[in-house]
Amino acid sequence: MTVSQPLTVTHAARAVRPGEVVVLTIRGAAAPVGVRAFGSEWPAFRAADDTWRALVGIDLEIKPGSYNVAVTSGDARTSHPLVVTAKQFPTRRLSVDPALVIPPEEERERIERESRELEAAWAASPRDRLWNADFVRPVPDPANSAFGAHSVYNGKTTSRHGGADFLSPAGRPVKAPNAGRVVIAGSRYFSGNTVVIDHGQGLFSLLAHLTKIEVKVGDTVSAGDEVGTVGATGRVTGPHLHWAVRLNGARVDPLSLLSALGG
Image (cartoon, rainbow, N blue to C red; front, side, top):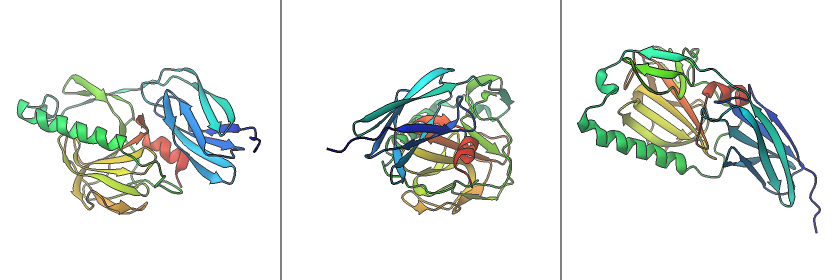
């Protein structure tokens, strides 16, 4: 009978607060690792012989407080504390086409269909990790809007800003942040021309408001491959790239992902 080794768990993150990515490192694992935190299971991958890692996303709606991460490997079990601190999110006020704030009735079915398609994509990620090594910036320009901001369009509060915006010029090539499979490539009512890449293990990149799309559903891409060009399609005030990341359902800041796993 194999005697389980004690598990040791450490974490690394830009910050431990809503919207951040936490990288767990689990050592002493003699069997596949299970990770549970914030009411969800988080896939782990082998990094070395007895070392595993897992990406945990702290969703925008997670309340500040002390949380335990439960880790198992065979008969071995341990828990690791995460103390989530508060973050103040700003408010942004924008003026856009009124039809993109209160859509006309004839667009309702399209919007609902596109929402269902996106939810289905989030739920169908393979257990295998498709991404590798470092994530790369999809454009070289700096981000110019705050992730998680309360968005007020034409005086009406509609949603939280679930990504990072980059003030890139129209026509700028947009690169895949990492390897994966294209699961959505086409026009969407709110996000305009959009590409969604499934990086595996529940990790997705959504790249929106493109002028052109250079890939199709089912294509596999590598980090740095061109998937489209910057544009001003959908609900926008001008040309820019919107990059959103979903991690096992959690809405996290793409800049946090770059901080945790960037080159």
